[in-house]
Amino acid sequence: MKRKRTAVLLMALLLLVSTPVAMAMDQGADSPGKGVHSGKSEVVYAILEADGDQKEIYVVNKFSVERPGKITDYGPYTRVKNLTDLTEIKLKGERVGFVASRDLFYYQGTLKDRPLPWDIDISYRLNGKTVSPAQLPGKDGKLEIRIRTKANEQAGENPFFENYMLQISLTLDPEIYRNIEAEGGTVAEAGKNQRVTFTAMPGKEASFVAKADVRDLEVESIEITGIPPALSVDTPETGDLTDGMKSLSDAIRGIDAGMEELNGGMAELHRGVAGLHGGSKQYRQGLQKLEQGSAELIKGSESIRDALEKLSRSLEGSADQIDAGRLKELQQGLADMVRGLRETEQSLGALKDRYAKAGDALDRSIAAIPADEISGEDMRKLKASGADPRVVDQLIRTYTAARAAKDAYSDVKGSFQAVNPALEEAAKSVREMRKSVEVIAGRLGESPDQTRPDESLIRLRQGLQSLSKQYGAFHSGLVDYTRGVAQLSEAYGGLHGGIAEMKDGTGQFQRGVRELHRGTSELARSTRNLPDQMQSEIDRMISEYDHSDFDPVSFVSPKNKRVDSVQFILKTESIKKEEAKPKGGTKAGEKRGLWDRFLDLFRG
Image (cartoon, rainbow, N blue to C red; front, side, top):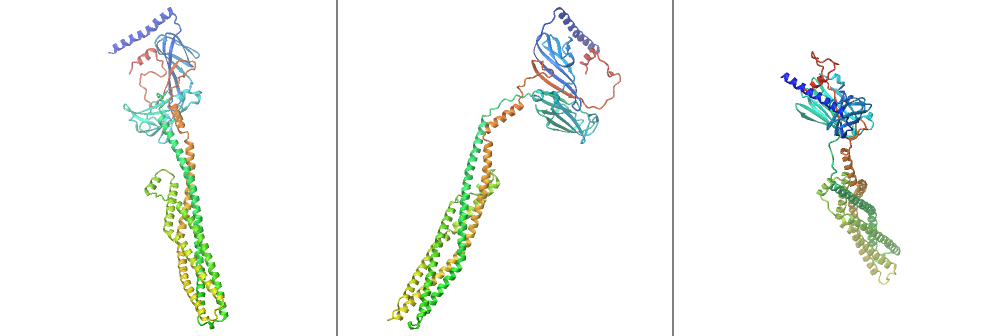
């Protein structure tokens, strides 16, 4: 079996060697002309240190030949190798010349000191401490592999960093790695191994971390591939979306207009409630003054009542028993009583007018408060609407205070309305008594009837007694009235407190609505061009991820044209434990011939 295999290899070698010999004979007979290719591709291979530093780099160039002949390529190669046949490739400076006779032609060029588009940094932490790759083999513990990628500043103009994505793959043996985590990446099955994959997007710096519990550690080569994104993003139909955004923008402007109207209405309501509070305050002060003056009013009324009783008693007896001096005193007392009654009548009239004005103002202000009912369900919906909770609470407190004031006023409105008629009736009674006293005083001023003095005295006494009784009834009513005033003043104190609370509530709510209106106005301004902004953002995101319009350029030299594709395949050196060298193996530094390399292709 071994002999048969060796014979096959020898035949293949003879065929391979005989082909370029025949071609050379043909070329000697007929010198090739200028060849033409339809395009070329470049695959850039790089070997990196375990920490990501660049070590070796070479490029495999592939040409699609349309017409065989001489083709020129460019690159700062240190050496070149024909990967298609055994014809010679000439390297002069950065100019590469070769003869292509097949549809596809490959050659390899080695570069020196040519920076890659990416600066790749790989670091290792074991049990929380940073360690060098040389210290890792055979270790146990918690391992972190940190990979950071960014644009390589030494690369100058860098279209590949801006337009290519990096795919980073780590192959992890489950015999070594347990509890694998990938921050910013994915973990998947790859045969018997686990594969961790990270992706760095075009034009973006990126950082990734792979974590695992390790035992007897070894790290296989990390594979990094740089390719253009295989993603062509079609511009989506955004008509419905932008129409929806326009509807949203219009709705926000509508909300802002409504808030402006609400703000104006709340300002007007607050002014009205402030006016109500001012009128209520004056009304309350008037009631308090009236209550404070009630004692003096009762005292004055008691004086008048006592004076009438005294006058009435002083006229008891016969006419000859009353001397002229006592009669004159009686006349003077009646005149004083008339003045007092007139002043009382005027005071009651003025009080009635002021009370009527204040009552009308209060009634109008209370009537201006809306009677609409807001249910508990409505309040819950309002709280769940997403509006500012502070403003909603102020609104509810204001509504509650307004309803309380309106309900309280409704309860005591009858008492308020009864005050004015009572004042009118009291003033009328005082007026009638004043007129009666004036009549009596006038009769006393006349010349007494000398023919029948006792009869005149009797009539006078009867008039005073009647007046005294009337005034007694008036005084009792006046006492009841002052008690009612005291009760009314006390009850109105609670109502006024509700009005004051409502005024504070409307003030706070009006300030909250004003602040809310500022917010809706700002929101309306910021969303005025929302559809255009949305479309611009969609276009920006598409342009960020869609690099399908990128025209490939040569990584090796700008002189190379018709470049169809460029790819980067990078591999780090593996981190392995040192193994004992087998006896009889190839010695380090020993040169290997063509035959050895050919046989390597067939070895397992």
